[in-house]
Length: 368
Image 1: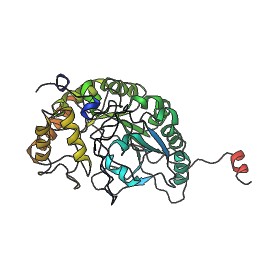
Image 2: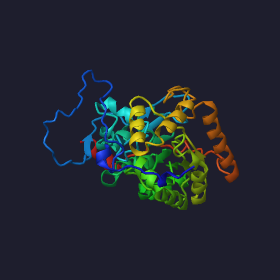
Image 3: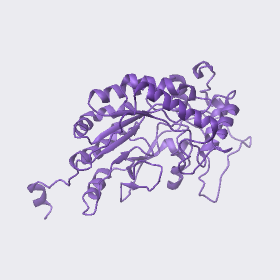
Image 4: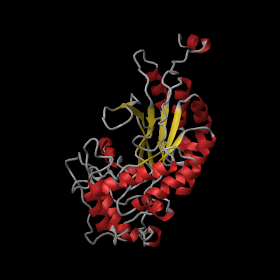
């Protein structure tokens, strides 16, 4: 198999590709009745093309913990500090969720970032309710909690500060080395068996990574993040995800081996998911970046999804079906067994949870 980095990956605006963005497409919101299509009538004067900028939008949500009862998820609650993600990963299954906010799953998803400035206060309020029953909270189940804007807003860090005060277990999923900024909190929590982190690595090829995940940390930095977390005593695993048939799936073993060498204790993978608008967005990306490979990749995806580009059904949506998907699972099991990973699943401590008492000064001030 020819390494993708040796192939021509288009990064030119004239090919309909924005450098530094996952897609230049902005398909209509699937919930809107009226749709507008842009076409060239020959009357437009040539203008300087301006690159799309990121816009931050305050979220006035009244709750912060999202619940789910999905039978194929190992958690029932999560917190996402941000909606939309500037990393711009073209394969991100969360893209279609931006439609619920009135935005497009395309360029809007990576440029219209909704943030939750009251997240810490809302989390403290929900954890303090008399009827609250503790369970591990996942940060980053939908969009990355350590996307670039976290450097200035520090919302994820403020959430971790609340969780630490309550001795509440947390599991983090990220593809950012920014998680290392919070090793002080996570290290203290891990010492009480209250924290673990999973680092997502899709490819070890920096050229392919830059095309697929334009604003995410490089593969080398993610491997360094694994080492840094382990050095701080924080349990860390790797998510070799998503696996894209015919594109990065040949790297499965090498990703797991590199992560294990860096200190990962566990390894898991998920097959590419393309819900709703994402199917067309990903196909467009393939034809623009890797036109000679596009048809083959899409064919293999359909072979792993019962003839479609996506399978929304529980229990098969993550792993796929058919011989190709089965082989991928067997390969993961083999390399995991070879490296001695997944020996013991981390079970975070739920018994330590406790609503902290207000100090007398704070309690007195609350009376006024």
